[in-house]
Image (cartoon, rainbow, N blue to C red; front, side):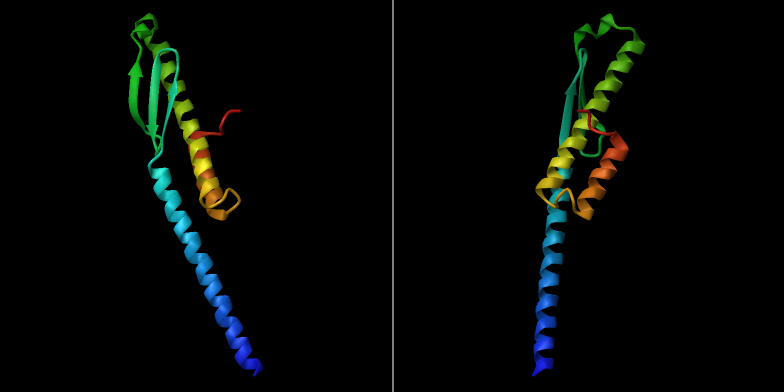
Length: 124
């Protein structure tokens, strides 16, 4: 009789473990889908930059006052605003991680660390 109970307990444990793995995989897939849809925008004095989920610039708008700047100043403005948008993306990804897989999960830490390594710590 004890062997049957041990087998039943093992079956229950395996079913529970499989259900947890399936749920974790579903949350990871949901995270990937939500992150892929993200974009972030930042505004400076003369430029507005939008970046997509991979951090690449998807839109750049320049104010007509940009002509007041030297080319070097304008380049610095655009790069600073782009970096700010990318850091905003890190924050948005962190929010999505918390809402799906959890910030303390191995998956969550890996995703946030990956974005932080690419785009830097979020200011403030």
